[in-house]
Image (tube, rainbow, N blue to C red; front, side):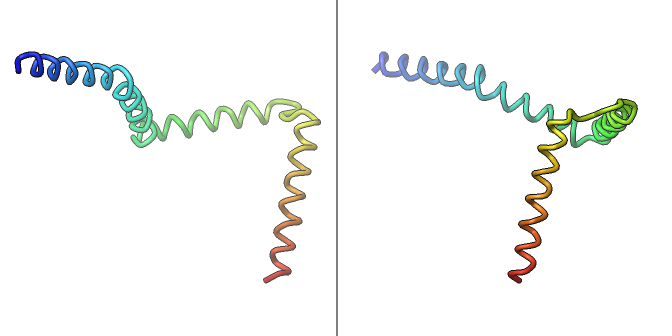
Amino acid sequence: MKSFIYKTVIAVIAIVLVYELTIAKQIKNITSKSDILLSKEGRKDGVDKIREELKKAIKKERYLSKEDAKLINDFLNKIALELAEAEKNN
């Protein structure tokens, strides 16, 4: 009977340690990042970072490479075509 209790206690401690060292760290990491995004200061910082990046992009002579610009243009044209077809079907 004593060995069963010892084995059970050791198993429970092992499970708790594994949980704390793996899953709990990930959960804490995700919650801390979500707290930053959900707080008022975090949102302000995010908006400020977006503004800074937009200012940098405006100052650049060319933001996208020619290949990327063509790829995005082709993608948008395909979406526009599919939307037009969907409009005709309705």
